Amino acid sequence: LMASDILLYNTRYVPVGDDQTQHLEITRDIAIRFNNKFGQVFTIPEAVSDQHAFFGNNQGLRIMNLVDPTKKMSKSDDTDKGTIFLTDTPDSARRKIMGATTDNFATIAYDKQKQPGISNLIEILALLTGKTNQEIAQKYKSLSQYGSFKQVVAEEMMRFLADFQTKLNSIDESVVAEKLESSESRVAKTANQTLLRVQKAVGLRP
Image (tube, rainbow, N blue to C red; front, side, top):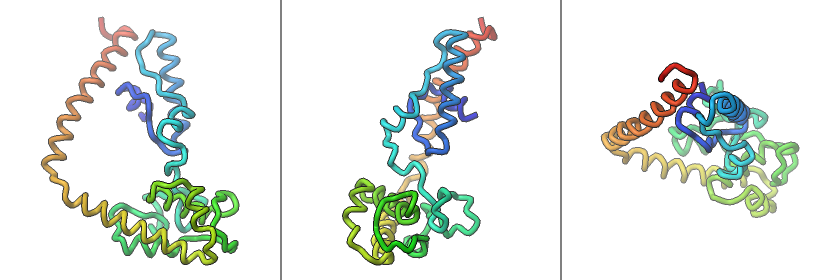
């Protein structure tokens, strides 16, 4: 189904997380095999390496769970303590970050193997501030207490959520509905054109 969605709309770039890259490869295989047999019907998505080069392979492709940094952050988290939702209050997000699992090294360093918890917090702060993971690690390496670093991350997250939720609450729902309707019309045209090409290629349409 994911491959169908990608191919139906002539998609070249699909910004997905690391755990979805296999689906991109399957989509490419389907498109290449179909085109080899029936001609140039599908647009072939770019290879995963090119996808990452386009949208950045270090830009939050997999944010990990705050409680268990060996698992990805997920909306299906049993306790929700390890996941920050865009609807969380800033204070709730702060408590989750302050309770994040770290380690006993007492060093701010970006090492996903040895320090997955701290590395996860570094990635979150990098995304919130527009800096690289290495820049964040360098800036805060002098901190000897994880609590101080967590507070920095928490404050940035609180600012982000407060700003995001203010903007979200100011949205005019009628404008969104109008935009969705106009977009649906445009993408439906693209989808129907692709479907017609496929049907003609396999002999279902003259």
